[in-house]
Image (tube, rainbow, N blue to C red; front, top):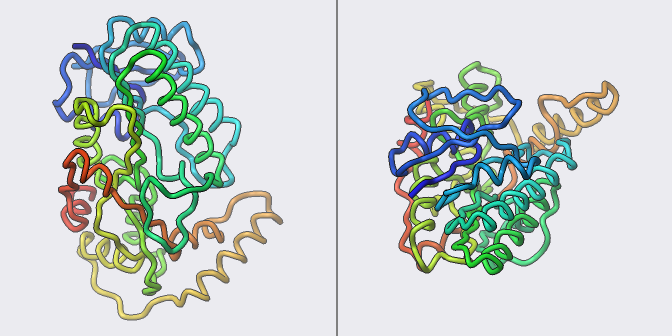
Amino acid sequence: MRTLVTGATGFIGQRLLRSGVLQSAIAMVRNNSGDVLPFGTSFNMVYGDLLDPTSLHKACTNIHTIFHCAGYAHAFTTSNPDAHWNINFKGTQNLLKAAGQAGVKRFVFLSSVKAMAEPGQKCITESWAGPPITAYGQAKCAAEDAVLEAGSKYDMHVVNLRLAMVYGSGGHGNLERMAHAIQAGWFPPLPETGNKRSLVHIDDVIAAMQLVAEHPKANGKTYIIADPQIYSGHEIYIALRKALNLKPVYLYVPAWLLRTGGYTGDILGKVLGRTMPITTEIVERLLGSACFLPTCIEQELGWQAQIELESGLQEML
């Protein structure tokens, strides 16, 4: 059975292809991007662009399962809202139509916890009500609806996975940037604010993808994928220093000072016309909460996160 992986040159797509869990895997790369599979040429490639329906119809021919990992992943408010909508929603719509018409049997969509309303200080599950507030989240939410609709229309096994912050070797996300900044010596020591942050190691994501693609109870479902263990920003900072073999610190930058720096960065950004290294949005990601619980997939399918933060950071670094 042939499996198509979109976003094959990205963080998760690469890891999925390298994992060895797929049979007859085909990597979809963009027509005019010059994409190269850095892991070699041992996988078959097909050219396809989410905004080019003709290329998608060709890519989906004789495919049994699709893991849709491609997308525009810039989740900051300064990112391009049109790109989010065109790639994350319309592109997914195009792929679903091509998949349905080609007779694809299974479709796993990598969404995000940003497709949900912000949880504030609560730890939430999939039942949390309310619309997403960012362009990224809105596009992902609309794409989730399109996935479920396509499942009904084409009698296709479909699943949405709402990923918490994913980290691991080869990633370029917030945690990886934080680690590089700590190692460089310019990341501020975070105070303990009692905030709650969810994350998940990429190997646990790959295991969840494989499980939901095959498990009949997963059909038509939307699941949060996260480590059930919750961490504060301070705890993540300490764990990163330990993983980097750096000495402990005993003095921390007060939260009020970090927030003041964020406000200052906002003002300077408006004056200079560019985004500063520290803004209120960045500070909120460090000090605020974003807590998501994988209770549903644990109870329904028996999935369990296997990678603890300490070992996950060692693998990442």
